[in-house]
Image (cartoon, rainbow, N blue to C red; front, side, top):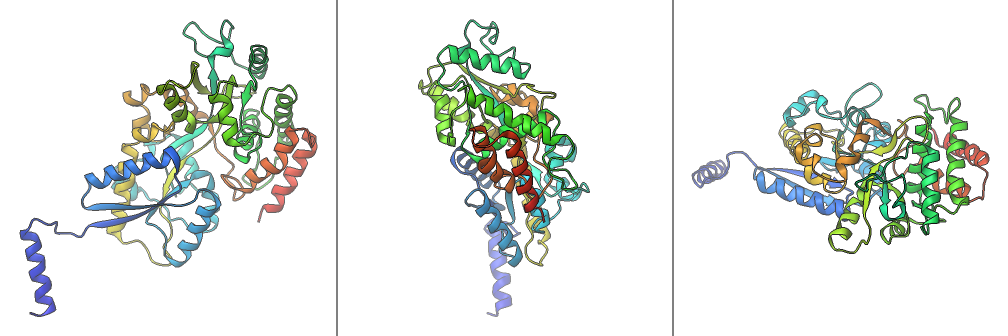
Length: 427
């Protein structure tokens, strides 16, 4: 039998056996998701694979941060990267500068059963370049929120009749609540990772953004106009919290979380990703206090909050365009993930896909639904190659801002050093 005849006979036999006429598509997937996020994403991938025998996702989890984005850059250059990957939208400007991302067209979205109007504008804009071309589809919105331990506020104006946080509408209100918590025995009235780049940066950036300040302009200017003075003010506030003994000293991330979960802090400024930690402890009966989480109140001139998004991006594969059938399979995966994002929201995230975020199922999800209002007021990092997770902007937080809030630099000197360091990192 000739090879051609053998191939034809094999195909006929497969059809008679009920096998699919078209070949199965394998989608190579990279992510950086560990811990609870990783568990939830693996469950989603397993479910997709079970529902789609014609498309199978083969997933690999790589190290979060710089190692992940370095791997993406090197693999894209030689055509050895994934078909789809998770991507922080705050890292999009760097990815565009490195030319490792491919645009996602209206036809791609249609293939996925999605449309731009399905997404929160703040998140969708963060997935676009300066000209409005889409390069990453947002999957969630994750921000810092204000966790609270109601036991330190009992009998005060800061709890309503149902024991929910209320009455914080200014910086003065918040600091009054911190002073009250200290009087009521809180070891650290407010906890965040004061000795960690992410924790320090996110609080600083929120205080700057709430004043209407700009860290890096679209033209690449560091703290333009009166943003320098606003940055100084943000550092002064964080320094005062240290001087008053209201926040922990040089706390690394795990220690800052432990202060709250152990009942030693009245408030925690941290990401929505710690909601599962709280709910798991509560369900196990290991918490010992009533808690909640709300959108960061308006402490300054406007109510905005630092935020980022996990998104889905399609990397460059060397000089070769992606096969159309492969791209259709990739978009099918992305569309399915968006429509099943309620399972991802269980990790504390806000779905970026509005049909899920506005569903009855999400409305019943607490405390997520309580702080979901921040989606329309999310303050994403500047559209700059030196901003975003694991970037020079985070480096200055740990190397300059953190020492300043601990009294080793004046706020004015810290901001000037920050400006000089970031300016030196611009290309």
